[in-house]
Structure formats: C-alpha cells, structure tokens
Image 1 (cartoon, helix red, strand yellow):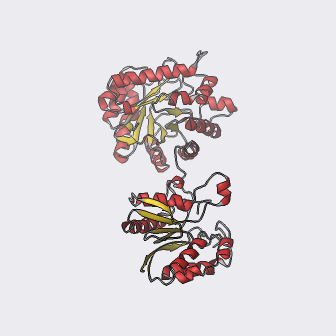
Image 2 (image 1 turned 180 degrees about the vertical axis):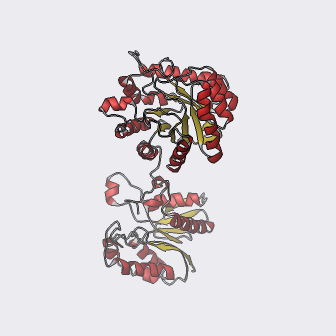
Image 3 (image 1 turned 60 degrees about the horizontal axis):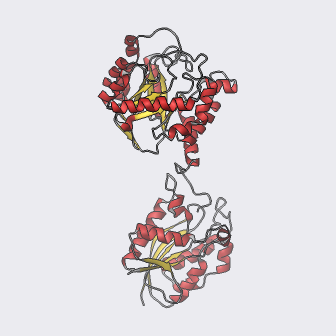
Length: 287
Length: 189
C-alpha cells in the first residue's frame, strides 16, 4: 500500500530515513549540540544532503528531566517547523510529541507526520492527525507515562503486547478519520522495555510487519545496544547497524536515526538481500 | 535481419537500478522494432546454444533465445519467435553474437592481443554488409577469444553468399571490454 505522509507519497517498497533533529539542550546522544535554532537548521541541511526523506523534530528529551510544558515545547518547535517547511518543500517533516495541543500547532506550521512516541498518552493527538490530514506513528510503551524509564516491567509476550497496542491505536486512528495510508506502527525499542524486551521485538519484528501496517523502528544508539555490547553512547553505531539489518530483513519501512548515510547503506543492502530492491549497478559476470 | 549481442546484462532479470547499457539497449530495441515491421508472423532466431556448463547447472535456454523473446515483446511483436532451422531462412532473422571478451586488462577474459584484429574483421564484415567475409571468419579463434556466435555468423554468410546487402550500424562499442554490435542488414534476393 502507498505510504502517505502528509503532502508526500511513497511506493510500497520504499524505505525511508527519518533523521533525528533535537531542539533540546539535553538529549542523550547529541547533548544539546542542536539546541540553538540555527544549529538545528544546519542539522536539517546536513541530513537532507545525506538523503534523509524525513526529519523528526523533537522539543523534549525522552528521559526524565526538567518539566517542559506545552508552551515551552511549542516555543521550541513550531516556528522551527515553519522555517524548515519554507526551506524544504519536498522534505517530510515529523514532530516528536505526545501532546495534541503541540501537534495541532505544528500541523498549522507545516508538519506532515506526528510521531506519538508515548503510545497515545494524549488521546487527542490522533484526532489532530485526522483534522489536518497528516500521518501518525503509533508506538508501544507498555502503558508507561511519558518520560519515565522502565522499572521492573514484564510481559508474558512483549511482541503480542506491542502488536495489540499499536494495531489497536492504528485502527482507532483510522476510525477517527486518519487516512489508512498514513498510519505507521513502531514497537518503540527501550520504551517500557528492558534490553531483553528490545532484543525480542527486534528478533520477532517480522510479526509486526506481518500485520500489514508499515513499521517504523527507532534503534539509534539506544541503551539496549549499549547494554548488549557494553558500550557507552558514542560507541554504539555498529550495534545499531546490526539491529538495523535485522529489522530491514523483516521489512521495516522507516528508520529513525542519528546516522543517515550508514543506515541507508545497511538498509539498502539488507533490502536487496531480501529481494525487495535491485542492486544499483550490475555488470560483473553479465557482460 | 538484425545482429545483436547475446549479453545477459540486457535481460530484464539482470536489470539494476541504473541502466549501464542504455545506449546499447536502445539500439537493440530500434533494430528489433525495425525487423518485426516486415516480419509477417514469424521471427527466426540464430543464437549460440546454451553454454554446456550452464546447461549442466540446469539452464537449458540460451541467452540469445531469452533476449529474442524479451526484445520482440518490447517491440510489440505478437507472432512466433522460433529457432532458424538452417534449411530455409525467412525475411526476419535475429542473429545473436558478439566479438571478443578479451579486449582489455579488466575484460571478462582479461587481455588477448589478438582480440582487436579479430573484432575488426568481424565488425567490418557486418558494417560493410559482406556475407562472404562472415563466411570466412575463424571459428576456433573466436572460441579462444570468448567471441560468441561466430559459427552462426559463418553459417549465415554462406547462406547469403552473393546476395546484395544494405547494412546499417546502430551501435558498435566495447564498454566492458567485450565487443558489441547492433547492425541491421536488408538483403536483396
């Protein structure tokens, strides 16, 4: 099925790079490197140059920290979305927010996609997506509130829980009027999950893609990679790319990443191995 | 008739995202489109037999036969495409073959200093429309130089001996160290 992300459409065999752009002073990976608006704008230019189809703009870090209210979140992202929209008409603009109020404001400013990273914590967000005819990412968090770390959380079957939750949110979004072609599901590695859970959803990602909903994975430099390999932030790229290859083999469509070119190569390679993409330039043995 | 290379890179199953043989492919399609206009209900194919090693691995249909099916379909031909039986040559014949695959250090068969002269002779006969010169090609040397379909060219040359030929060259190049040609012949009787 065609993937419709706001004003943009993609073929059903296309894979998409969603580059992370933080308008935060305290995100775990870049530690505020793009906190200043011009630095964030430079980051957009960089990832567009690297071939990213989507930017995911976020105004609040996922981990616990200083309270950021909706007004401050809007100050961080709304005008920035408008600026990026104006400069890059062909770019898909996603905003990472759980708040309907923020979602509505960024849609007015030109966003194409609402990345509801906290699993429908604000039930009004899907309604906003419908009203503005933008796309929605439905994520699995195991029901934990926004900006909390998993603590002693367990599942009888984490993948079954992830599918039930994300598909349930997806069907609800469609019922509220979101275009069926504009709903994406995300198992949300490390959100409401310990490392064993994140490894299991990676290993069994094919069960999520088998639902028929396009799947987004957000693996980049996360703690499940760090714990698995005992590597600090900054030394997790290889582990991230290994997990990326597994998810690509299983058919994930969108990759939320810090490193665009590296991920693009891994996804293209895995996609070609899976027989879903032709190699780019072939003549060896065929001349 | 039309002379085309039996190069697997032209087959749709081996297409990449980028077409490395766009000009060659366009010339092949032009030649076959021209051919099928006068073809009646049958296009005959002269193609080298399947490579014995490939045949032993289960690939029993030659590249030329597969290319003939593909290119006639692209040209919109709805009639029969069948192997020429040698006894009677129709008006529309696709002849598959190419020059040496030993034309340089990076060529599939590496470099052979005899390749250039051999290809000059073959290509010259095709471009000038000289059946007698085709009939005189050295088949054994062709095999050594990884030239494909030379036996077929010799047979055609003999069959057309004495016929006047108007030749037209649509493509002649060796982009991967293999000599390709796309040449059409309009034969008088």
